[in-house]
Image 1: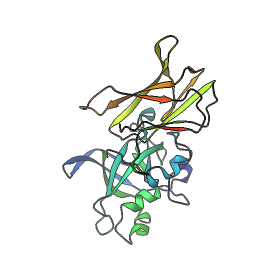
Image 2: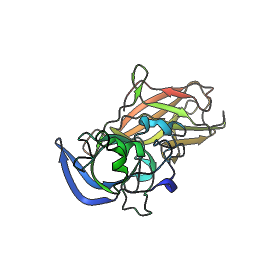
Image 3: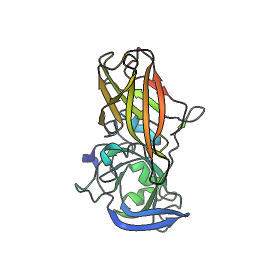
Image 4: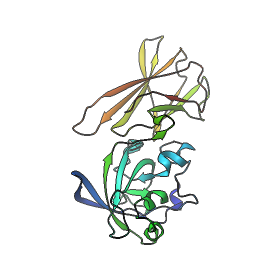
Length: 256
């Protein structure tokens, strides 16, 4: 999503919390960025590309520091509820972070919602009115992500990005993480030396390595870290074919 399209912002009210359904929630004010279709965009800072347009059915958000945290926020989900009586519904929407942005040019902004996400917080027939109100009060807290797909919810996947060039340059983006854990790093197995090689973090959820190992299969190790107080050091192996191709997506069949 391009921040030049932002027409309104979310200003974080630091240090203020609330409780909704027994879950501690942060308080902020929210609006949205404008787009022709109300969805996400293909140029988000997480590197999801064209998938980012319809990622989570367009219920997406950009976040600024400190929430962005050099891309560690990519793939995390938040339940966001607005607080205008007679306009906002009680459920709110579940958004996934796909981009970085601060809307008003300062780090005081917490989120910038897609238009679909903002309107999803409204009661029937009040979506347009909500977009016309300017900043509205919201509550938000982190929740697991659920990605609908054929045959059930989508599982963790690794996509070889279009910027990859076989066999000289391997770039991957991690998709559909369940939001319980943050992705810390990616490693690839060098079978000749029998050791793991760190894949440098490129940006967002993208990791890239020049001259990657070419043994079959190419084995990646994803390392996740849970939220404070939860399990730390969660690892998962992903195998991709020796002759991988740019644009190919590989399912892991697990949720993390």
